[in-house]
Length: 338
Ligand SMILES: [Zn+2]
Image (cartoon, rainbow, N blue to C red; front, top):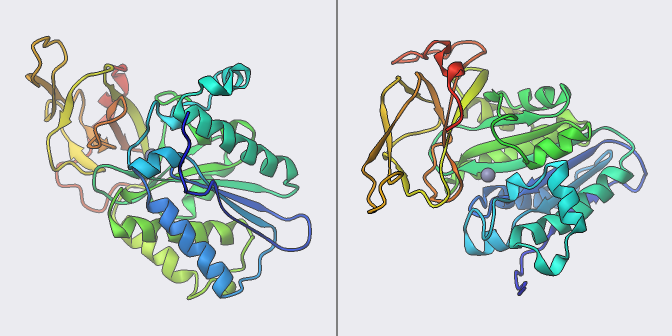
């Protein structure tokens, strides 16, 4: 396989001369069409160096899907954020690297780096995986693993999505979380929006401080502006959302969301959300896809890749400050996977 990507795998590692202390692991670009995390991490590394910020412990930042980033596609052969079940990792270890898919080759390199970091860590570990969405909307988090993951996520002051583990198998945070480490995804906003880079940058600083790697008063410009930026972006949203439904697509299905849906859009049962060519051998998206339940629409698929059409959830934390059409009752829980 040709591997010509110039993008580095190791964005940066920063540590004190002394051994020990907490470790913050940041991964970016697991999806190749989500470059905001890469830009944000470069900003943080630049500012750490430029301001000579003192660290206690270690920061390590790695790039995920370099081939996807080089092509600005979510993935080349397969979704790199579905490969991290222990079964699939064991399968990867047994397989001949020459026969790797593009993403499995990426995973093979990344997992060695992650394991080396985790193996050498002798303080607390926090993993932050930076993502963004094809649809517009405010930042939110997804957690996996130990209860401490929620603590790490709640530092951002943005909504946390619960219940995704059974709906999406094989995410990177599921793997790191299964090893007992707090693991958080920040979905920073829309893939190309400049504000998404800001949200990611702020989340990294908040994580560095929350984990004790950087003292709050050592953050260039102060930590408060990072906290405020995240809080402002998520203003009025519920603190916790229980996700209970994913509209799963068939391989090759031609699926198109109606334009204009954002993350956290309130939808009512029966609302027209998308068109699809499923069951129409002649082609053409003649099938209507409607909301099977009332709730909060999340991660509508606008990027044309991946088999998750959209998700539905409901507020499980404090109610939104203003909810024009109301968040539906618990009927979303009764649905099954499509
Ligand atoms: Zn992603």
